[in-house]
Image (cartoon, rainbow, N blue to C red; front, side, top):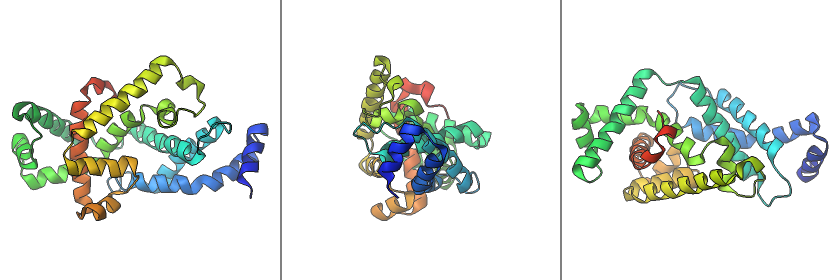
Length: 256
């Protein structure tokens, strides 16, 4: 199977049969992306097959919009569309209980208040005391709200689905993403994210880099840092909440 010839034929004629062959060829990319996202979601919340279904929609969108003339690797372009489609659908189905969202808002507010009061990042014990719970309960809650923080931050990380691919590779060919105001927004978000990451403690900064830029799963990050997968989840949530506070200028895009 010559993928290059299939691409040329599909872009020339748009035949559904050719599109289906391309979808089957790239379906492993959808499954890999779904598996990585699934590892951050509470057990029983979302099925793997559902994530794959959402991802296929993103893959189809990528196949339709990808420009063969641009010097961009399709897998890189498609992965952002695929992940974006999954995240968009997860937000739409509102899978998280209201009580969990309330806990997330409470903890985020605690981090914000304590950082202002102390002039530094608060410890786990300080946050637990501030919200009036035992440290063990607080740490468990951090793990429980991990998925909420992932979805919330990633929507800003990728800066909405239609500008995601352009933010990563400016030669994606999406003409509707080339308006000056959108280009400015992409650059501003990237600048703010860079600053918020740089202000994290070293271990959390490394964790964010490994997860968002190197594509490692929680399990793989745990092996690198020599900590448990649940602890990775807790540290990730803590890092995201700290970043959200520093990104308050984009509060409208960071709704839990």
